[in-house]
Image (tube, rainbow, N blue to C red; front, side, top):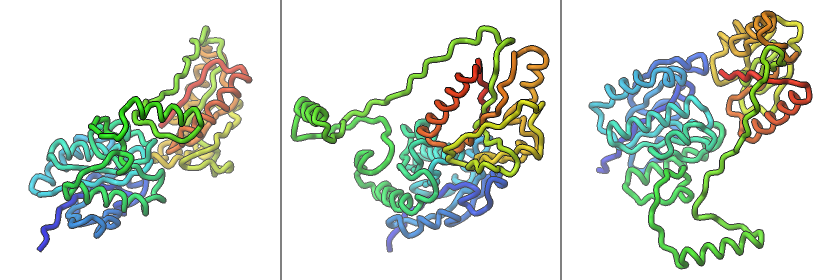
Length: 349
């Protein structure tokens, strides 16, 4: 009889089939066997079974990390297990942080291998990739059919003690570790070969990727705030009630500018949030909590700032790609420059 390896699964309130954003404060739960998307892995990991599932709301985890870790420690103390799988979280920021943090904690506390799956833009990748295995998956849950077999295959390797290939072969994010690799040609010959291919505009693969970071020149300081025109921007998804311009709840490629020239504040019933990355209840009750026009107008009336730019500029920052964010930022900045804006207040959530 084969002794099956034991796997514990971590997921959030959505994939755990509890609810959506309204259940994001769900406290951690421990269940025996696979629950929710853990079932997608059942039977796909060689000689293994999912013995338990931890479910926790995204908001609850990121705001109560120590409490959740204590919960995990208490519930895991009498369980023998061989691997923890979290997610995949794709490009979901809070879920990604939770998955990666759970993996890092369990690996350190229980000395057991862990893994998750994230999209390359998920902030958890840079935060945790040196400590745990993070598989490269698609941007949204639409890619789960490819993510599950990829993660299951890698999980089988980990459980069976098989040799793990390089990041490109296995499709996990590089952990920053150097290993010896033997090649037929020496380094000088390989470098010359790459140089020749580059000169000929032929495809080639570097052996040492260097991180490239955008350099943004800081704007000069505002000379006199009391005579300056200030623009209000937000990535919090604040739109006109009913969202007549169809602002996406996530992965936005557009921004909108709403006339606020005659408004003292953003009133309930006139504006709302369509952002899918946080609970919008309090933002809908008072949109100024996300885009504080009321306070800016007060400062304007008191002479603390010169004037307010007559339009609220808004988009949804949830899962927006770097390319789209860069494009929109440049367009907005040029518009502000053309209209004589001196400074911008950019609010998030």
